Length: 198
Image 1 (tube, rainbow, N blue to C red):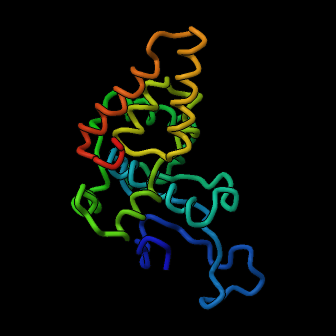
Image 2 (cartoon, helix red, strand yellow):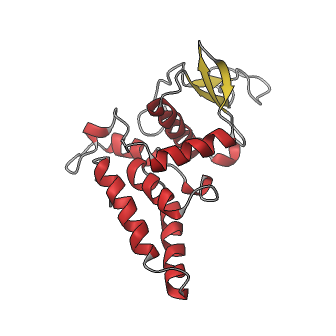
């Protein structure tokens, strides 16, 4: 069982190479590592879910153990398409600028301010996106919008805020830190997400 309560992985979200790098694969010893993640729809909610699934897998198995794991879009109309870096960059920009932020709908009602569901809170923390994957492609304000609206790891948010504070101190910008915090909080409020507004 994967930490956070995931003991059944839907077949249409994960493709497992039977055998992996093991010499003698078995169901007892393991059947190998993930070679790709895919979703069956190009809708925003499904692609965000795909990114959250990847983040959760990285938390559980380690990002270094799954280098360059491809993301795929598989639809009856278009067949299999690689969700490559250029498409991901375009998607991140749309997320930051035009997409109304939202939480994982399967967890949203279980992670409110008074929620005591440890399993669901752990899953929510595992699904946080890493801003460092997109920092070179987006403005700091866009990164803050994604962090507030969809959730981002503490380390990547801290790095964003520290750099903004540094820019304010050396005079490269005026109130950059305040602008970034405001952008993140506005997105968190729009997503009705107490945890990303913390």
